[in-house]
Image (tube, rainbow, N blue to C red; front, top):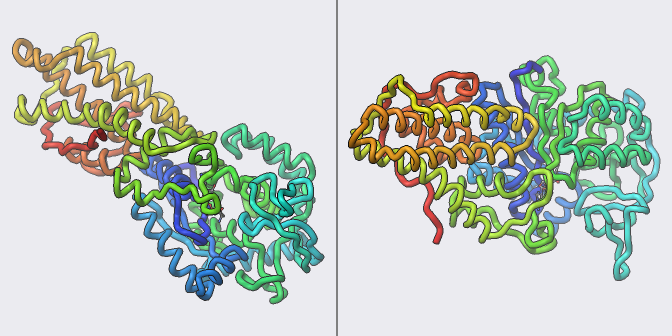
Length: 511
Ligand code: MSP
């Protein structure tokens, strides 16, 4: 893959219930990186989709009284509609029930069989349908006569059945060497240590097929078995690139993936099983797995089984999509878990969006439209405070690409909001309303600098709040091709003489 190409994915979602905030969170994070990279002139491929096989889905379909495929058709559409509601810029939406995906999974399975990494045996152990995961004895506890996974808290059942196994244990050393060599394969770093310790503690071979139900992709060599849903699901990242057509444009441009964005609960699958499958099939592993924390409601993970779901669609209808996107990206620290509530959402909208960025744009646009006939002209004589804000902004923007390349969105947003804060202060200090009476040249410079700062902030916030930032950039008459990050390399964004349009209110203050 060429340096300028960027392939980013979300987890593919189980359509076993309606989407909730956790799903929205994974998707928005990935969308922000995808948009940032596009604005930085990269060739981006952004994938999301639904994970439609396995016992969990089979059971959900039975409960709904539908055939599994009809059930998936219905619910996958709900997730596809959510991509529009969340304003995701995904280039593709994959379903694991599509023919293109079957082709890829079959090919991968055959490769693993051919390399001698798959053998037939019998699985005896614990299984969680809710996680679609196997657990060891030491990962299970008993409560009130039932058994639960200590890792996820979900109920487990005892399973004994014929199964194909993948020789995961044979890849233990190769995996450890790989983590060692690729320090940033797993981010944040705290998660990397968890994975390394788990691998060091010894990997057992992994059951990769099931015989006690039918809803899945049949193993090519034995129709009694369906392929384990995680081996099936992980392959989606290749299917969307038209794998096994490795000479095709998509695969050549975009594999290995730049980042798989996932929640920390599914790190083991992505950071251990997935690279091991790929090593065995002689396919390059992805460059990075970013495991974000959980969104909590109170102190608990939001989940259907716990009934503490904050509905993203209701929040979007009541507050707006940019508002939700900004809040989730700003308030929830991406490495760790974060609690969300309507109160803190409202505080965040008021303090950062309405009072800071929104107010900055409004006051500058209104002043120029009311006092300068909508246009300002820059002149050469910059004052010390003009020079200072230009310099401070430069300092605050220096690490932004680096933050994004390391999935450090919290620091990114903090820096950009600081620029907005500084610009508001600059206007308070420079008082263009007074300069209008006695120093029109200076007033023009102040307003021009303010507009340039607004343009920068808007381009920088564009991946997070695309709707509002584009309204501002439209009103600045900046064409869509110029809404990129070349100003970070010293290029001008707005012309010396600039004419602006009116700007509607961006964010309503919540009282
Ligand atoms: N189908 C698998 C993923 C397969 S990827 C090859 C799956 N699906 S899921 O629908 O259960 O969850 C998808 C994502 O949503 C996971 O990354 C999970 O971490 C995220 N979230 C679900 N609940 C969450 C929170 N409460 N908070 C944050 N994200 C969580 O797992």
